[in-house]
Image (cartoon, rainbow, N blue to C red; front, top):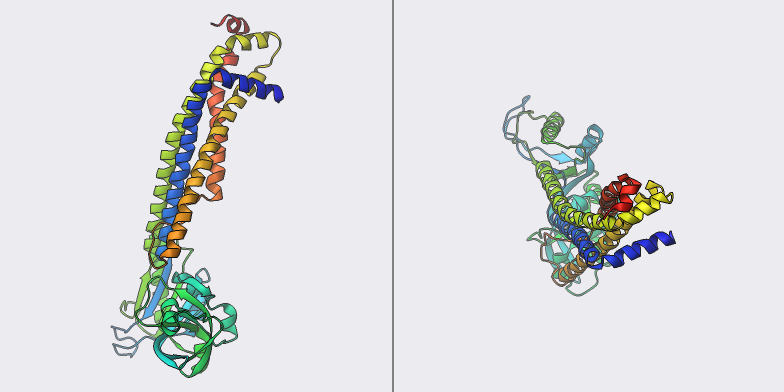
Length: 412
């Protein structure tokens, strides 16, 4: 191994400028691949964070528009917690099932009264609606099971009742009942009213064991096409029509906000961007590989006589191929990792600047976030480097060993 490295070093010394220029092209190709992949990743993360781009479905009950089985129209359709149980049992593939109810209330803190909008929710509401924790935590499953009297405030509500105080762990009075503040969140779109979140089960318990739901929402991760989405929505509509005695043809009875179409479109866009980025990066990298291959061809030509002498002394063709490929791999890997480290350093710098700007201006909506690489891209780039080295070295190596020994010795 030591002799092999010594020979590779001597070959490098004979072609310093050409090797450095070809290595730079490899480094530049990997650098651009990392930068472009990071930019695509940042765009994807920004869109995912700033918009509800998951396959999220919200169902809001409305008024019937058709008479059905003796019921006149219009008639109000009302959801309750039993509908949650029904949907979970009939559609076990849905995720993050959540119901919510809302009503006006009064919050008293430090002898000051503030009108608020009370929103009774379940833990999945946090993920479905892209809330962000500012302090503390959101409502969890244990809060629901134990009917805890806890409350989560939005940031604007917290600033309204106590601008600079630490509210976590303190108590507020909502509609004459004391609730412990466990968290402060930032909604994607701040409501004009002061908004607070209570466990849905606590509200239901205070109202006699059940409560009217203003909406039901969930995610459908098992849906992968628009055709499946349409059939799924029809099945939901039919199930709820049987549950609440309205016509399956009555489109006005339910307002179903289907985010699957936007979700699938966004996924397709991200795939196109990823493919485009890799095509550009690999095209740039290919130029570098060709450069390294040319260097190896020149190196092989200059050493053809040496290879002939080696073969005459009993050197096996595989040993010559191994030497040339090893030299090629070392060149591409060395310069490639320089490009990769430089690219990662740039994306990390951009990410740090984004974090600093976000902390300084937390209310600014950004469509670009965390442009750093994930492990899969790093592994892919490493594999590309190794394969590039093998390809760049194998072609000239194969030509060299195919020469007859006597022809190689006489080669000029």
